[in-house]
Figure 1 (cartoon, rainbow, N blue to C red):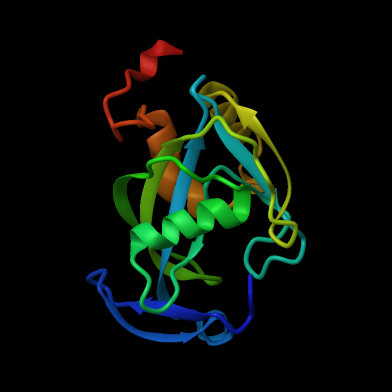
Figure 2 (tube, rainbow, N blue to C red; figure 1 turned 30 degrees about the vertical axis):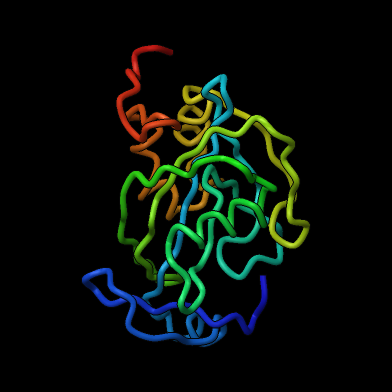
Length: 181
């Protein structure tokens, strides 16, 4: 994470239209592009990590999506691959795009390009961004969010929890029967 990264700005129709530094994006709450990747293993568990206390948005909270801002000129696919690798060391797997979502609160505003993948390799935390993590079953994650929603990043809960509940499949995007648990 770099304070002077140049971030892609997105209009209300979800199209890139310009760029600004991360510092300016945060200070003015400019609408920008992001990625969110749900990382599953072959046992259908989801990787849930804790954000470091120094993150500029939602420090110290748990998150079940890897991801981050899109850089100026970066495609969503390239940004998703970069973020999955930077945050968790995820590499060499197909990232399946499953949708887009809009999010806005007093801290951040963005269009999010959503992906899923299956990864059985070693998780390697980016020390500046991730302080810990664990694999969780869908039902355990849903129970943890229900028990303490304030411990989770609100944008992931609002924009991606339905993917966990709805049975998004890591290899094809959709089609998993959520009653399989």
